[in-house]
Image: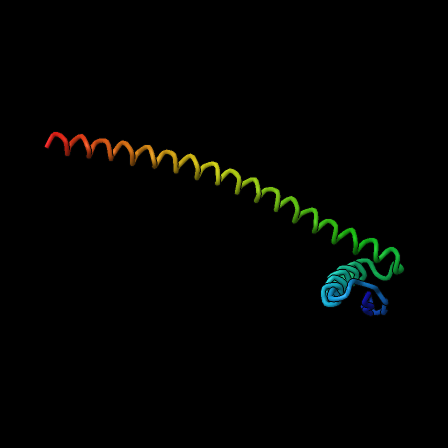
Length: 109
């Protein structure tokens, strides 16, 4: 298990992670630090526990918004796939009808 020191709100914290995940953990800590600093700038120093709670809630809110957008996009993809299938079926029917007309004209001619 790897150990990384990350900085949140100007303080270092030693955090363990799986080997190879160090850079990912550093990036996550950077995102969290930005939220904590944002809360601190808006509300002043509240103490680490309260700042961390507010930062975590802001990130959770962003995650919930992203999940909602993802769900809406997945529903739209499903709708578009269904519509594509309907249009493909319609196109095949039109091509079959055109082929039948061409065959009929060829037979008459």
